[in-house]
Length: 417
Image 1 (cartoon, one colour):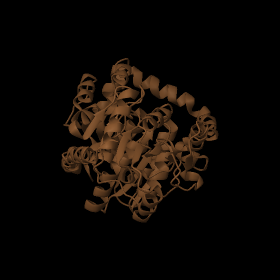
Image 2 (cartoon, helix red, strand yellow; image 1 turned 135 degrees about the horizontal axis):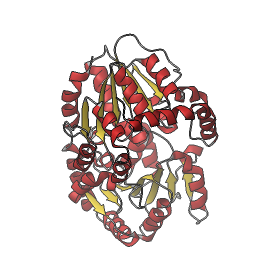
Image 3 (cartoon, one colour; image 1 turned 180 degrees about the vertical axis):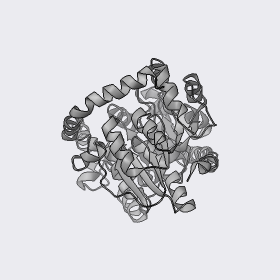
Image 4 (tube, one colour; image 1 turned 120 degrees about the vertical axis):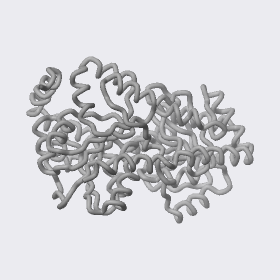
């Protein structure tokens, strides 16, 4: 018998159904939805279902979907008889997947979790396996897939203390959803404890964000940009958020060594406003999305594009990780810079990556305030041997995590049709 909380959830999401199209249109006007693909969010497919068995993999946004790519590639290589459907919830992740999904994999937007939308989606795609990563748990979709015979896996699961506290208000719903999974692999011990407290059976640990090769880059473009930058050292500030850019720019300027600062904003749409704000501080700015050239006079190059982080980590001599200098963001993946042998400089707020930043050791520098950031940049800009030592140490940390995918595959393979 379904718990009362599940019954109430289904009733509440059912009542939302008439309002969902209007809500989605409003989000589209704000740039938060793709207006040409809103029907996918209502469960209407925009592609035919391939014949044969199908594995459905879901990641909410860019970070989660990038972490899925090694699994998708392994699936296509080891089991080409299984079609792959990848869903995500943001326009930026859809743009990235359009470029990086291998042949034989289809992308769709995840439908909203109303009974009608989830039913349309599942009736069309009929997945044999549904694998969700990180923190998204949608009861109608997950339990509907289970009722249709799909195996369920929750992989690289992450649950914050606040999320766990929210689920404890609905213990019956939490137990029902979590007990539907055939495989649960949290990404860290803290999440494992929280899931167990909610009634989950934890089968081990796997963090997909530790998996992967070095990010790709266009070699010809890298050569061109290096020539344009001249002999200046380069600081790459990656995945920055509003409020971090001026702090990092001021710190770079305060070193007095005049390196080129490359800013790669977490959300590329911020690029034009960011350029306007920094120009107002009398800095010479070049905006990549506008085709503005990098020259010897450029102070800051704003790389407001998707899928080029590998290019700009390679271009830079030092990586400064955004998302770690302001509270309530939790940091971003430092291994993408570490795999390329770049010393990693980061702030004091990295709760989402506490184990990895804690393991950086000699490969990273933690900065509690702007003065420490200035000092760290000054030392690294002045000392090429220190940059080399830190970069090698960071790369060693990244290489230690290379076995995660093999361990995951060994546990996932029995669930495949």
